[in-house]
Length: 179
Image 1 (tube, rainbow, N blue to C red):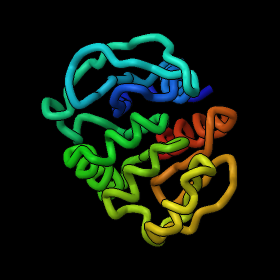
Image 2: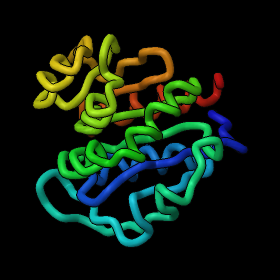
Image 3: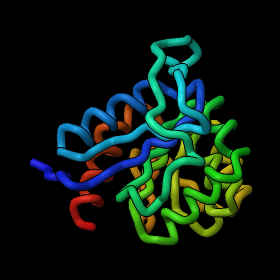
Image 4: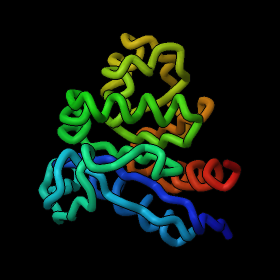
C-alpha cells in the first residue's frame, strides 16, 4: 500500500473539466494518504463534465494567484477540452507547470490537458501522450507523441483518456513515493 502521508498535491482546473479525470485521481491520492487541494483561476464552484454532458459541480479550494508552488509536492492536470483550452491561455497556469517540471516535481497530465504543455513551450522534445484528437497539436509543438496508456518522461506523466486512469494514478503515486 502506498503511503503519501505528508505529501500535498495541487489539482489545477478551470470549468468544464472531465469529471472522472478529476475525481478518480483525487480519490486514489487521498486513499494513499496525500493531501489534495483544488486550485483554479478563482475560488468558487467548478463545473465538471461527463464527456459532452454537464455533471456535478465542485468547489475550488484556492485561487491560483493565492498559492505558492513550493507548497506542493506534485501537480495534477485533469483533461476536458474546454478546461484545457481555458488553462492554456492562462499565463499563471503556464508558469506553474513550467516551474513544477523545472523543480523535478511530478506533473501528471491527462487527456486534453497536454495542450497547456504545448502553449507553455514545454512539449518540445518530450515523449508524451494525450487524447488522440490532439496528437497533431502535440507533434506540431515538437513532442514525440505515442499512443500508450501512460508515458513517463522524467517527472512528466501523461495519459490519453479516462480508461487509462488506473495506470495514470499508479504512475503518479509511485513517482511521489520515490521523490
